Image 1 (cartoon, rainbow, N blue to C red):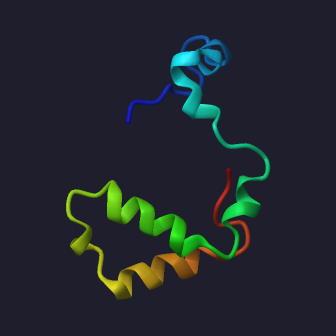
Image 2 (cartoon, helix red, strand yellow):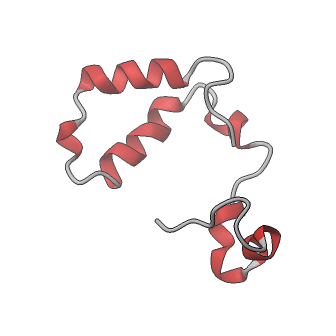
Length: 76
């Protein structure tokens, strides 16, 4: 996915563009919505955005989900 680069160009104007609405789709409550559900959140990326979801073993998924669940590991 293409994304604007912070510090390059008129950053705030880029983010306000209706064509790029998804860059500000989240908000300050996003971390609370994912808290305790990190595995569900990560599975979405592994299953739907990877070239081959089978490349992510169950052991790897548990490993990453455990560390992303640590306090402060994920930020919105």
